[in-house]
Amino acid sequence: MKRMFTSLAGVMLTLTCLPVLAQPAAPQKAVHHLSATQAVAMAMKQRTEILTAQIDISNQDAYNKEITGAAMPQVKGSFGITKNFKIPVTVLPDFISPSVYGVLEKEDVRDAQGNPVKFDGVVNTFPAAFGVPWQASLGVSVQQLLFQPDVFVGLKARDGAMELYKNQLKVAEDSVKANVLQAYYGVLIAQKGLAFVSESKQRLQKLFADQEQLYANGFIEKLDVDKTKVNLNNLSTTESRTSNLVRITYSGLKFALGLPQTDSLVLTDSLTTEFLTQDILSLENDFTYQSRNEIKTIESSNKLLGLQVERYKLQAYPTVAAFWNLQTNAQRQKFDFFAKERWFFANIAGINVSVPLTDGWQRRNRVKQAQYALDKNTLNMERFKQAIDLQLVSARTNLTNAIEQLNAQVENKALAERVYNTTKLKYDRGLGSSFELLQSDADLQESLNNYYQSLYNAVIAKINYTRALGKL
Image 1 (cartoon, rainbow, N blue to C red):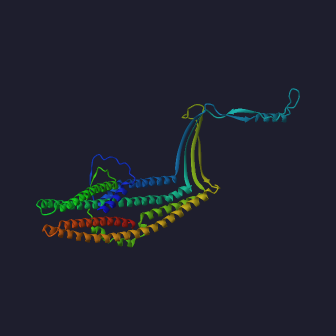
Image 2: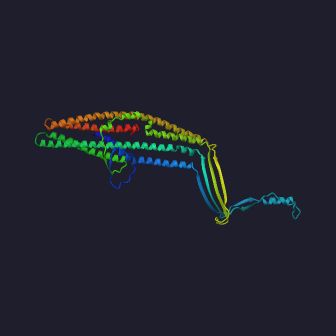
Image 3: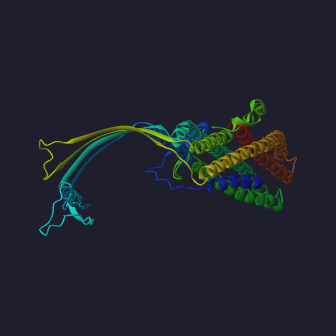
């Protein structure tokens, strides 16, 4: 069963090498009875990838509400009290002296010596303090945005951004579901392999016991007993290796489910060839690229990138906002604002218009960068469509081949079992040799190993095919 061990171990290694976040220790061991459907549902509630994607959706919802709030009226209140420990001084020009001299000259006033009084043209300055020690203000302002490119493009992008994160959640769900199903059916196949090995070991143990008795009675040679013992030892080694593989596959399934390793699992589903060989190729008849959540995610990104281009283009337009301010002020010589002295009111309303004139071609280059990003994303989508076409061809071919091989191995297994049973019957009646019996047993083991390997290959092929169709 070496090939089956290698394939199953490879899948388990892939699962266990994924980034792991420390999970809280369970207070006690739990036993979970799960079908494949229930296992997938459990993983959807506990896997870190799913929980992270759900947080992203909640975060985007909060951001959408923030953008909505920016388009609603903004109301602010203000209150302040100031104390001028020293009233600021302003230096004023001497506007009194020139006026006085002008009157004196006009009236022809003379000094004691009889000379006319004239202004010498020198304007002096003097300090003056204006204001009072205590001032207070109380006001409320309302602003309503009428037009701003960033905000209104953001309002248009709300649904697109939410759609993007929801599609990313679906992509994460597809990945988790595929991992869970591969791990779940991997455990079932490993268990079948272990049961087969145990049955084979029991057959050889009985044969070995019978041969020891025949050898003791002198009916067969020691060589026959030794050959059976060698096969029995090899089978014991295989049983131990298969038992370890079962434990590893269970651990990988627990990880895929997001469960603590201390929990126990009981799988309630069974795996049959009918489950795998049913006609699923007809699912491709109604396939479209939009069936894949990855394509939906890229399309959502394209919409947002298109809005980004529009946003930068609209930055050439003015920003318009209406406002209304209501304010009252008071000045006092002492801290007594609740006296009957007057408060002075101001009531102002208006519209602000901010017009961008020049920005050194920054906006134009931002538009170019956004358009390049959109073009690049469009090319990536076309490239991904080509990858989907290749993936479908490969998955369809692998599934067809896997089913053909499985059908062949089912027939081969039945033939090997019939040959072994006939050889065993002849041996029991003394008409066959132990060599023939051991050879038929070895052939049966090989046919069952090939059967389980083809069964495993068919499981993986079906999961990959349905995932390629976007119908996992």
